[in-house]
Image (tube, rainbow over all chains, first blue to last red):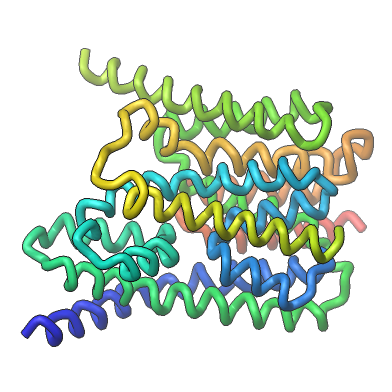
Length: 237
Length: 107
């Protein structure tokens, strides 16, 4: 029966998604706390977590808002962080293409790093899965990830209003991002891109309106992809 | 920043991020990225995030404000712990511990 296999797919997804609690909950709470420290009210903080659901981009936007960066630069920088999701969208399309319009809309809404990574892994291993099975598994993974993201943001925001303002939160955003990027430095190309980004953002720190970061990121993208090409060529010869 | 401005940022980020996620499902369809675009997209987080925080680590009090030993030590330990353990939580814990411990010792 299709509905019972879909049901078990959903439960399997839910169980696979659950361990991400250890990452989602602290991250959501940090966002909530920092949001209140930055002067946002609970509705605005929840607006970010419900409408954007992208932790890195949200945190980056918050940081840039606190730095009085112009709105346009805030938007470009934060959306640039989310561009990787276009790649996720492209690789999930062969699996979700036959789904209905609203299923695809919902699937897009909950497309995050975790749901993408687990779903692609499972679909690759089980090519015989039906579209509805795939969707069930994917939504099963997303369920705990997304609901815990809302809940932890909310509790962080409530907590943040009770915490004294001198917690040296200025360090927390850099700490989160460095801790997120460091484990991703798997290849020479990743290291080269990260180093380029760091060096150029310091060199261009004098540029107005935080635009130095955009220049640094753009060059870092090119450096990363060129180093990848170069290492591939070297491996072949 | 005004409430209107904050909600405008939330709305544009929300819609923009949704469109990025929905792009291939609904708008572009079953077509693949050219390889050069895939290569660039792979590096977006690692190209943006380090540059976003580097000035905060080197000049936590603005470009003329000088260095802060606790920030530098905490950041260095977070990076080292993250590269070594491949675990974000370990990196946050190690970097945070060193940051607060250094600040406490020096003050």
